[in-house]
Amino acid sequence: MTVYKSGKAWADNFIVIKALPNGLELSRYGFSVTKELGKAVVRNRVRRLLREIVRLTPVKPGWDVVFIARPSAVAVDYHQLKKSVDRLLVRAHLLRDRDEAVSPGVN
Image (cartoon, rainbow, N blue to C red; front, side, top):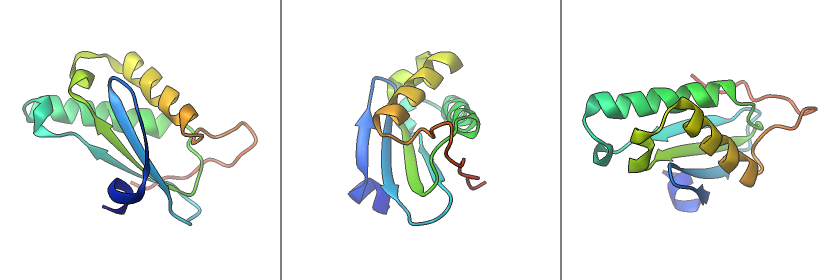
């Protein structure tokens, strides 16, 4: 809830990212997919895609990040969603540089 209230936000057509430093040596992720996007099958598909994209993306450690899917995210494929997430993480300076440690993340 703190990330929603106090976190800084970056957005594009498909995703909104809210992030807040957490003071830990790892990053934690949350995914918000509202009923506005469709029935459970549709929402779960978008959530699974986002989870997989974040799992494969090297994010800097020490952040709490919430990924909020917009209704337009339903109509796009994995690659478009990945480009969107990568673009937002670059704008937020959360994408790990080559020489930085990768956050182990949380299951």
